[in-house]
Image (cartoon, rainbow over all chains, first blue to last red):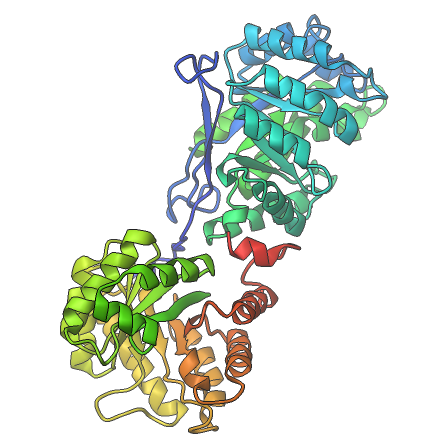
Length: 318
Length: 261
């Protein structure tokens, strides 16, 4: 009996975006990263091309993180006070990109100035050769004040900057457009709002092929399945020709996974759960590898062990 | 929704005059306007009055292609005009249309395949248009069988069950819904479902309302293509909205804007 061919015929693909610019391209990066391009449901390459390999961005904060458990601080012990050295360490651990999280500009967490922030961004630029993601503190006023300054300082570097929302997108959209960066659109686990933000941003003449979507991430045990199902629907919409849903997707796995008590609890508080050294990275790994199946192009991560495990998984699937 | 903009047709005076005087301005304007309105294809029909229809078809397609990249639908019942049109098209193309006599299907699927074209197949043959669902479905079967035989991609076939004007036979329009449903079950992937929408309401006093209502109802039963007045914004908005209701596209507050991107 002939086995029927059940491959789907998708008509479209996920947009490709390049982040970073080399010297020849007007930047200073040693290499650029291109994401997207998939023409199939993740890893179902009998339907069409898998596109570009998902990549890992490791987080670097502009202030030492106050809520990280010891297990997570340990691999970065000497550098949590020094973003440039921290970034260097991340690259050694295998980061494809650095995501500079501007936690310290938040009015409640340090209220750092634009000048300080620009200095930090530049120090990272000088320390590493990988492309950068710049992530605000998600306090609208402060982001609108600081991010444009950072964007201008990094003009030509073709960074990925975020995030914009349905209610706060104009300032950053204009800035990224002027300085040649790509942008991250956030929606709170809501596919309809995801499309809406993309429309709003594109109505300001921002090119669709420079947008990356972010559906706030849920970690394993903390709503991961909601993120999964929305990202899956986004991928299907992209493949069936919805131009406003054809953007690559980014996930914030590290931060979310390490908020889970299963990941961060001390060994003495939860002896029955096994050693935190294994448990934490495992929580982060499982969140990342699960979400990979739904269609993710950039994964933000924290622990080097988890990064190594997820990279191995990606390499084997590709 | 595959919307086939009907406006470049020699039945319209401005188009007829343009063809006669070889003045591309009005044609290019129509091509642009229909493209901006969201047309998937631009139907091109030289009309009955053209003195050299083969030459007129080529000229129309060329002047349209000078202005827009929107795919062309070559609208003619004459083989030499279709061939001439295909010889000059640069982008995707749709042939509008063939009847369902086996020899016609062989001929048209052959040439459509050569040009990687899509093809509208009418559920009728040289003996005329059937009046009922059953006979129309027999033609549908025949079309699908021929497509398999020719290894012709099913999604490039648009089956048109020949919608009668409402004021000619009022029993007919309601039969279409049953046919749209049945066509979707016939194969996987299924052929597309098309109608000529303006023909349906011609000569009535509520032309636009009738077209809009039929299209909305049809979409609920699986209609997904129409030769239509894409410049009728209410009609386009109704189609876009019906498809949102049928969960064919992701809803967003600006879904009407989204469609036109």
